[in-house]
Length: 301
Image (cartoon, rainbow, N blue to C red; front, side):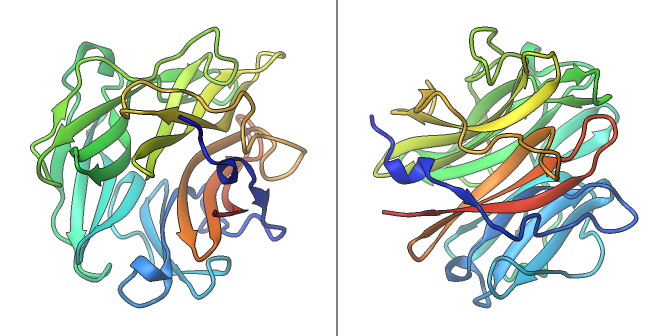
């Protein structure tokens, strides 16, 4: 399998960051996006989380965003996808500390939402105990049915004083709301031989192109100075279970002294005409730092 060249040629939008944290908070993270062709009203729609919950933004051009009121509901790390005429918002919900489940709400119009359906809960030894987490959803569908890729367990970042995901797993179903069957072992884990995943697996967003699986993985790693880092790598797979790097270097990584100085995090990718737009959040520092959302643009073939 060879990943097409357009997956490696993203340039940051010069107006980054495009979304600031809703005051008085210091973070807005984990963007997930519907382009106009997939939305109910011909506008761009973006969902992201702050510490207070999941927020909904709209835009006419995908660069200038307006937040629609306060948080919709508690939760974090959302993933929005359309199946036929229904929109599904997958996200992570802490049902009690320190246990999180993967849940989903459905909507006909992105404004009226169902009650959350609980799809995954920690049940395997490698999914952790403190915390016991199932989150960071990535949803894909095809001839194989429905799949939910998810992060589980956690690692501690001592220079940031917070946790990030240790492993990535996948669950399968015949129906979009399950029941989902988990594969018994993780598909990605920390690997000391992988320079951009030597500390934690982080999260993955999975996409299909010409029947092949392409993954954008923000692994967690320690750099040469021992600092916690995260960057976005392109992975490839023929079956969606066994993954390898498509190229050695990340397509987006920390740089400079500005909004993406320390870590580059969770993401979503959408096609719009001949463009690919990669929305992601980044952190400006380690323990002291804020998180904002930006976008990088490439050309689709």
